[in-house]
Image 1 (cartoon, helix red, strand yellow):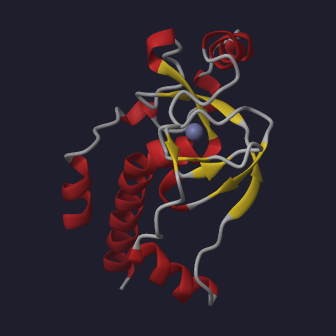
Image 2 (spheres, helix red, strand yellow; image 1 turned 45 degrees about the horizontal axis):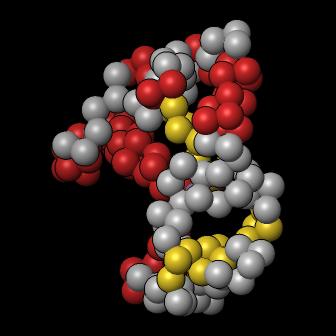
Length: 161
Ligand SMILES: [Zn+2]
C-alpha cells in the first residue's frame, strides 16, 4: 500500500488513460508519422538518436552513434559513457549473473503520449522518443501500475487465505 502512496505523488493517470488501444484515433498512423518524421525530423526529441540507426546503448541513457561519438541522455556530446549506477549493476548481477553491458541496438522512434492517454493526440501531448527514452519516460506509470497490481494481489491473497 505504501508503494502506491509513494508513486501517486509522481503521477496521477486517469483510470481511463491506461492501456486502451481502442482509444487511438483513426488517423493515428498519420499523426504519429508527422510527429516523428516531420516535426522531429527522425531524431529522438530527448536523446537525439536517429531513427533506424544502429547504436551502442550505455548507462543512464548514454549512447554512441555511427560517428563513434558518445552522447548523454539529452544528446549532448560527452567524452565517455558514465559509470553504471551501482543499483543497476547489482540488480543485473543478481538477475542475469553478470554486470550490465553496452548493447548494440537499432533505434526505433515511437510517438509517445506525454499524459499517457492514447486518445489525446494533440501535438503538444506527443513526443518522438526512441524506445529507451519511451521506457524511461513511462517508468513512473509502470511503477504505479505495478503498485496497483501488487495491491490487488495482496487483496486476493487476503481474500482467499
Ligand atoms: Zn531517445
